[in-house]
Amino acid sequence: MRFRSVRRTVARAATAVAAAVAALQLSISAPLATPAGLGHDPLIVRTAHGMVRGTTGPDGGRVFQGIPFAASPTGGLRWRPPRPPAPWSFVRDATAPASPCPQLPLTLLPDGGPVLPGESNRTGSTSEDCLYLNVWTPPRTSGRNLPVLVWLHGGGNAYGAGSDYNGAALAARGLVVVTVNYRLGALGFLAHPALSAESADRASGDYGLMDQQAALHWVRHNIGAFGGDRTRVTLGGQSAGSVDTCLHIASPTAKGLFHRAVQHSGTCVSDGALTPTTLAEAEKKGQSFASSLGCTDPSSVPTCLRTAPTAELIRGVPGTASLWTANTGPSILPIPPHKAWAEGRVNAVPTLSGSTHDEYRYFTALNVDLLGGGPLTPQSSAALIRLQHPARAAEILGAYPVSAYPSPNLAYSALGTDQHFACPARDDGRLYSGRVPVHAYEFNDPQAPPFIPAPHTPQGAFHASELAYLFPMDALPLPSSAQRRLSATMTGYWARFAATGNPNGPGAPSWPRYTADHDRIQVLDPDRTAPTIDFAADHNCAFWHPVGTS
Image (cartoon, one colour):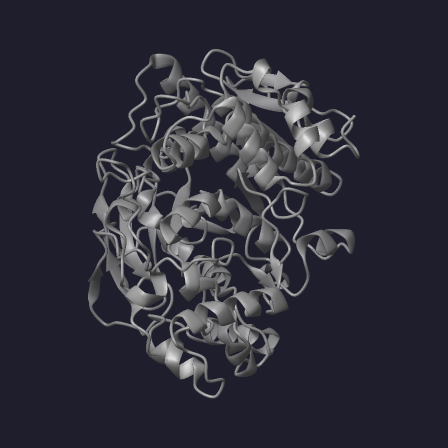
């Protein structure tokens, strides 16, 4: 989930990567393909590094949690590409999740509650021993060659954990579901000239992306033991996880690691998307961060950073709100995604992508209502827009007049939704559709269970509201039969897409393929799931992206 705004509140290697990949591959034997695992016990599975024991879920499916896919990135392995985990000779307990990667708790509500429903958001973490993944399999333990979904959590590359997502509902549809931890914040994305100087490709940053690709390598070599098909891997994520998925599509080191992609509410190519910075920009911000820790002597910066307490590395630092993004320079992402697409240097795979109808209402409710002192007025809304959009303020105020909305909060939310989510998602879909099959959606349940109390901003289909329909959440049960039917429709769509590259199937409303010429986006609504041709008009995309919007 995207948290540039939340972070502001909290704060107030071609050779290197190739060597790491080679090390990971050399540490792994031939692909394992015994779906039931070891002997006659389906709860014990032999991986390339050792045996793991899982548990049986309430629906009869198997769950394996806390499986290491890389070595603990501590000490001298801080800010280095991931290394293979050490093998073990015992049966490792895999019945409980591992620690989330280091992060602050998101307990920001006035009552001390978390602003997101994940357990990691309540507890935070200071453990760097965190490169683990979790696997869900369908209730039928004898299944072979099942499609695989690898899921990257959101959280602005600074929050969240794979264990926040319950893959049971999607696994029940015949998928093997894998959720992944990856290094976050400074530990995952810090670039610095001193770190670049010690790297074989003279670059730094993007360690979190390297972790994600290490997990994909683990899947390639191990998923057969859990019944999965290494040739049918779908990579997906939401918000920052979706942006990272977008980056892997443009990454040369991800070639062949996945075969389809799912992107929820996060893009990396079009205007308004969370595009990566340059290495020079990332290093400049990294120097400011290092200075805040007292690491200023160029000759000792790496040592200073690697001996800094974890708690210091995750504390809020003023001016770093946009720091924890990927950068172009490391060989995992040598050129910007838009250039990779223009030059045809992408991992073009079938894609299912979309956004929610009211994305930005969550951020308005959180940052304005709960943390910012109350609802906007016409005057404060105009002042905020002038501050955030100095060059286009008059145009934006004309395009989103407060008088056209029930409240200033909703007017401000509409422009944030359209600028940062809806129109970039559509633009990326238009770009992708020239090369690969695309199925585009908009989630639109106006009564989706909210994450936070929002007395002044009805949440509607807010950012991340669709996740409860795909990943069951005890804290957010779906109260109505119509919502539960929509959940069943969505899990069916997602599972068929992972299996075939096409979400359509018997008994489900027809979902047309998206093309720029036939601008049809599937609306996922409890009352009616069907395509619309009104998405661009509804989200004012001609205003934000006037080229190619007709």
